[in-house]
Image 1 (tube, rainbow, N blue to C red):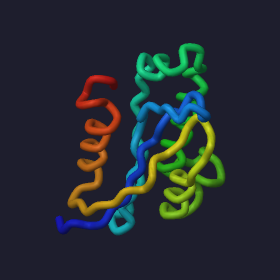
Image 2: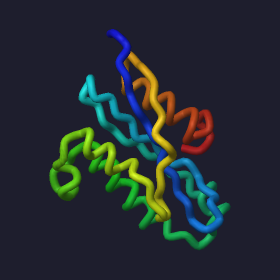
Image 3: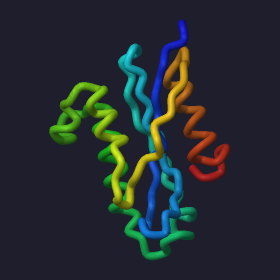
Image 4: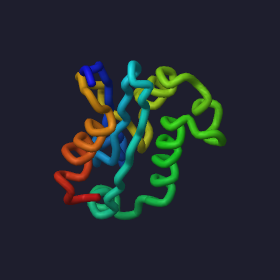
Length: 132
């Protein structure tokens, strides 16, 4: 497979926005030419509770899961999920001042987007498998 351009952003939980501390909890990856848009999440309660002991993790998980469903374009995930992939990606990575935020968008080229998503999750979220 020939290399194709892709873009990704890291999903973060920012328990106290004013402190700007965060925990990486997922990755959103978009490869237009392969018609690939996926978000994957791995929530590590210990890491998040280190920053916010009283955080409502169930609500955080629900909001993260909603982003995964929107990326997948699932029926029933709301009107954003019905948009074309590129519009869903831009909606998912739009800057916000909420408890769930994304990093800047980064790019690269890849042969297999799913493999890149796996690698990014391991490198950026699960800390080489320690936090999943």
